[in-house]
Length: 336
Image 1 (cartoon, rainbow, N blue to C red):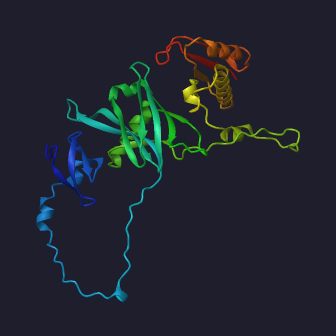
Image 2: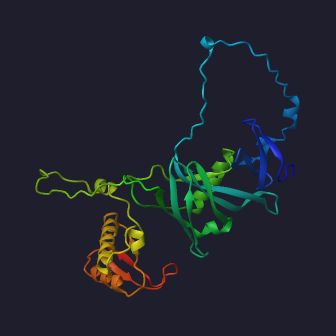
Image 3: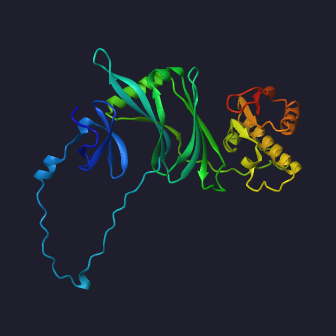
């Protein structure tokens, strides 16, 4: 190959110099320019030696006397970031097959935060066959976070990418958590790869969300004074706080000021939060909900089970072993 790790190269489109930090394939390398790393095709870079040799030496003219009245105002150039949301990005790594054709060997998966906010996030990818992968970390503003690699053949497993985002620091006007997920089909994947090749781009991405959602104050409708107005249920649902597929009722997850509370006060807070997220799940027509109550003495679990027996939306629920929560969670299945 023409280039090696550590080579200094010239970006042909921007005339900036950078360093090769990773060889991805024969046609693709990872370059670092001023602390920022990004993939680039080898036909878009060159060695900088000719440019350095051919550049004219800059002759600094003698400074003329400038009087205070003639001083020009300095113009400050700023580099602006464009807010476009949070993205899940795929970087295909190519290799040659026995016929010397380019084939995708694996994908490097990145989380791109193209916003002004910092997010704490929990990430999980679920496969039908392969073991699941879990990760928790922080995504900084206008930065990319490398998640992991996925072999190409495992994409046939119809993986599901699940995220739970939380603002850092928290904002009272924004929701506490925002859950989103993405599932890619094989046909969609091949289409994206072909589009990427046609555009001569090294990656393709999917938008997870553009703006972190606002918190909506709970409003109890006054049916007697509504004046006969009919409400659109689908529009009302859009204004609700996002539902959560997993709710952790450990008291330290619900409040920072839990030390010194009595057992009764703790249980009251836990059951109040359970009811809140149960109602949100029903309002959003969620198919199921996992409630983490822990093992302990079983008091919280028993209280929740007694409540579930009275709920008409509950088709069934089970407190069975789960690979992530052991016997400390109950999974609820709804019927509508």
